[in-house]
Length: 276
Image 1 (cartoon, rainbow, N blue to C red):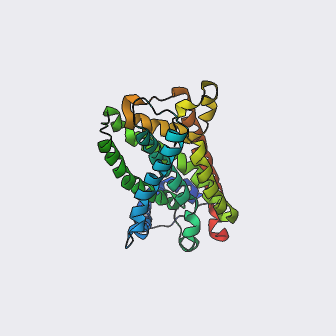
Image 2 (image 1 turned 90 degrees about the horizontal axis):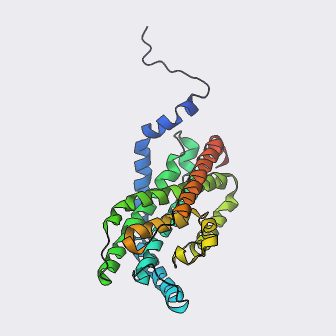
């Protein structure tokens, strides 16, 4: 008897093969990611321009407020605008990834309610838009380095590692919030507050070295602190130092929220189609 085409229905089989299904549905991931990118950039100028204007304008404001008015120090001999922009790059990557992932399930309500696939694909594919914005914004970094005649060292080769760290830092909270957002729609109003508040409590406009030694480890409970310090170390080279205890703590917080986000997402995933 030929059983090659036999369909086996077994309780819990979908959960058992969930992570394997993620690979099987990889084409859907690319389709959704490409759709989000094309919607943002196709037949529009402001989408591309905004990815350039927003970080540049923020850098100028922070340079005036923290560098000129507050007279906070830069890192080593690195120009203050360059130090600020090296912190803005990971922050915008984190913030855009978190915002995109947190609202992705609601934005794909029709697809989720009609077709089965691992729902984890939706928020992870939304993060691709943030990466495209990051690449566009990265162009300004080269312009600033040319303007200030500042050459990066070999440490710039480690930047992909810190980019990956920024994605993980945003993915954990993003999965958790997008799952809660399906059931409690009020969470969509919380994200802009988190992003705005986080911008000022993270060392974006200033160096984390200005935080006193007794508070610096506690300050590193903010996982973005380790990400920003890593970016600056990679971009500014010897002019920047990584506070290793805080960096290790940031990794621990990132790992915890990633575990929590995946756990809560998988726990609520079966009810998405009914609630959405």
